Image (cartoon, rainbow, N blue to C red; front, top):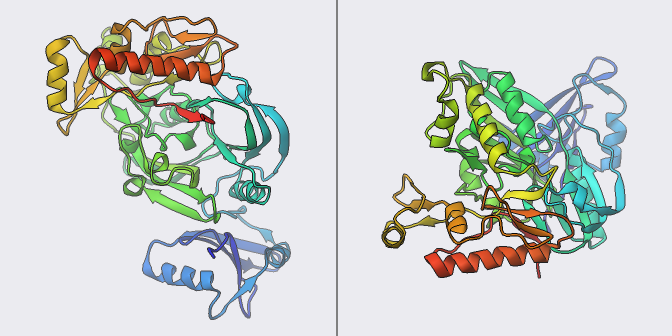
Length: 437
């Protein structure tokens, strides 16, 4: 039977306490003076600490096993001198665990489709996530993990627990020369985080401005725009295992990033809840302006004067002109991925459609603009009363009000079928389908 985390330990013959969050994460509580704790959060990267955490996990030698109640009783004898990192590198946030009933998810998703969640909770700490996981398992309630609700299409009511990941906080881990490593809570708004980074002179994310959603969702699909992907500035993330509550750190290789893909959408789908993400930014990061749209926006400024803020502003103007504001018109951004073709398949397509918009990739494949295919197939601006295709961007399906997820999905299927019949290119939805039969 797998261990359930956290585990609680004490160093025999002393007051020192340990809390083990996962196979590499633990916190150490050392007595300081008469009434205070000195708390250290550890990530076991090297051999000595790996040996220690293994002994803690197994409760061997001088490390006694405590119940959570006994551990809390001992901890409360003193006051922490530097906060309470009760979950590894946990960021500040309330630990209030409030369960609500019958919550309309229309207010929590950018499509704005009405769908009731039987139970709802916002988790602002790792402990709150674990509480929700235990509750869902004990009550045999299906779990729906939600961030900003910007990449999902709800097909029906959710009969289980909808868990909103709401960890907040931005913390500098290390500064070395122009390089800055920063860890960000999964519940932070993505765009506001990008702007915060710019305000601090931390560069590298400006091309990803105005992408909707929360920070925690960004690695799941390796968000990208205008020549930059999240993986380019990714350091690591920490996630909690759904079954065991164990905290684990994933580096870029472990995330298996691809085009709008990661291990969290494939082999590990549904197994982890991301709670924080760390980024490697650079005060002197090179400007990424290869996309013609950005250069067009910046053409009135001398190129030598272009700044990272200018690039972010250009991206925001481009996105605002093309993409509808979810606060005004329900949508989930780009509904379809840009298909990637092998060179021979692209040549075949280009022979019959010479004007097809495309972007050669470093590996020799060719990325095709899905919006071009959809627009040329005649779907741009298509209106079906309660929903349709946006008039300015064929990649975006929109909700005017009163539609169901099934109706919007039928529109998507009709588009995919028509594009394939006309161009021989199979489109794939980028938006997650929730509750689809």
